[in-house]
Image (cartoon, rainbow, N blue to C red; front, side, top):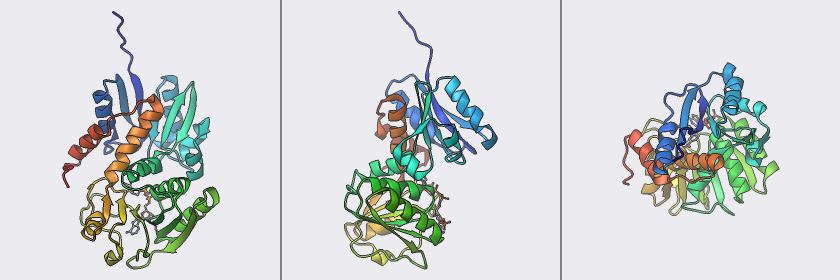
Length: 286
Ligand code: NDP
């Protein structure tokens, strides 16, 4: 009987990397699918990124994630980029196909896959809090998915201006920037509200400054924060009859999409979510 002792190799390059749980989530998915594949979480310093990329190529990895601080720096090593990644200007997922390195960005795609479980963003009005890397990726994917209008709200307004211009210039979606002063008021008729700031990460009581009385019943209110999954932002929205969407789903879908790009196989999202929930010491029960 033929035996095969060669595993498919994937992984992640970032620094610091020790607190990144993606490896546990993806390897649980590989195991559940019966795949002889590994995801290796590598601490790669900026000065060694080129060597790491060439190493992955030399060892015929199927692909790898690039997290902070390499999402922009990795671009110079790539042969090609997907449209959204090109518009966003950042790559967090690289596929190796026939010796060529292809860059994608799964931040926004993971968010959209999660969002689509509760609403189709086409023709919708979006209120987006934050203008960092996550907000940029989400705004571009929402624009490409046919959202009608995005208001980008940020304390440093110039960052919001940049994202709004990026969406207007590259998609059919209308986009405007707004200075974030005091408690932001959500305009009446908004369909989707998103916290894409880092406020709430690791702190169940922290909340982005929003006038909670402007949440509208029936609105979808999403958070990018994966841990804790049920942020105060989502709890306040749910109290007012909104549909909350946890950031944990965005993280799980990024894993699913990455493996689809690398191996052409769809892992079980439920198994992966359970693994992360256990790590974050939470329960899926709501
Ligand atoms: P960045 O550092 O690029 O951006 C952070 C954003 O938050 C900026 O717009 C910043 O505003 C804003 N911000 C920070 N503090 C405050 C505050 N007190 N009030 C208002 N705004 C504030 O980070 P990322 O975009 O990369 O990540 C943001 C969050 O998204 C992180 O917590 C990260 O964990 C999470 N994330 C989740 C993912 C998932 O899969 N669930 C994937 C990627 C990220 P300013 O521009 O004015 O400085």
